[in-house]
Length: 63
Image (cartoon, rainbow, N blue to C red; front, side, top):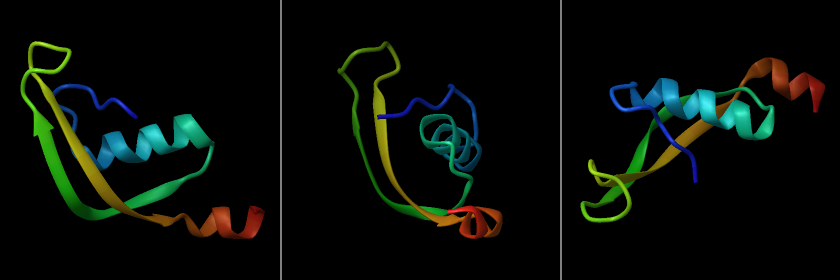
């Protein structure tokens, strides 16, 4: 599970977190699904997104 900073755009946070966790550059294409839990761990609740990503062209050459 990744964490996006409160107020950070989804596309920026997802791209940043994918790179931080995997070392792979990918581009946000869209949200496929989402759900939420308003009483989970933090005062703002949790929102969960399933996002469509595409591999950066430079990554295709390196892998």
